[in-house]
Length: 355
Ligand SMILES: C[S@@+](CC[C@H](N)C(=O)[O-])C[C@H]1O[C@@H](n2cnc3c(N)ncnc32)[C@H](O)[C@@H]1O
Image (cartoon, rainbow, N blue to C red; front, top):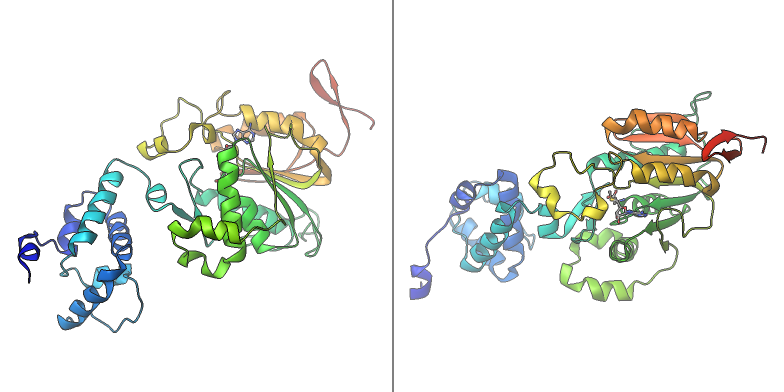
């Protein structure tokens, strides 16, 4: 052992995790990430584990360190460069920065999406919106929307349904739909240029490298993005529907709906305010979208919205005023059928007309 090595304080995996002061799972993930960003130490660390004769050191030919390895070898001394990296990441997490921003990735519907500080971190409850669209075609993990009369899907599987993901952010909703069903015609739209470029990057990577997505290193993203230019996804910058002329069979929107007076966790403060907050108790943008949507939905089209349970009652009432029929509701989502009759505006309020 060299002099320098012997003077470095020896910190084991177990002691580092215990003294981290953060959630144990987060600490393990940080350590795994720190190990894997120093490929030169991985083989050495694994061979030390085998030499230690620990009964837990099962043969492992992979070229990365996993959580299983961390759990199986709490006695391993963390090499200096890994320790430095882990401490840097730990300081960010102790400052309550979300892991998704630290690692620049978040899993959504089984795929890894790149998240930059310009986009909201995809939430598990948003996966339900994807299920709603898929169930309109009779395919989803949970099948939440069925025809009230027949229980059968509303669209045939090979129908080329036109879908708009409005307020796309990282692109997680629309990209998932397109990857699950390539025959869908999907448009991704956002008011933010930065969000649109994050969505584009996710589309380029996930569409071409689906199987390899996990293996792509963050620092090669730009090269991959250039190599993978692809045009079967539309991207539109628009304030709600004002910059969009088409009609869609389905508009799906997870717009900002947080009211500024609500209590949020310190982690949320790292997310872009423009992706989170809206006036009128958080419902301003949702209500505006409901007002604009009839002109942009095909006959029998659907409007699918994510919102907070506290907003359900008022949003349902507002949508009803504009002629939407509620088809399904879940704790964070509402599915509406487009108004079946033309609505005329009289004194600024909608009323049903004869067409
Ligand atoms: C709550 S985030 C949702 C992001 C993503 N769809 C998801 O589910 O993770 C809301 C998104 O709506 C966008 N947005 C905010 N105001 C908008 C507007 N007036 N028109 C279109 N998009 C808007 C934000 O830029 C942000 O990307």
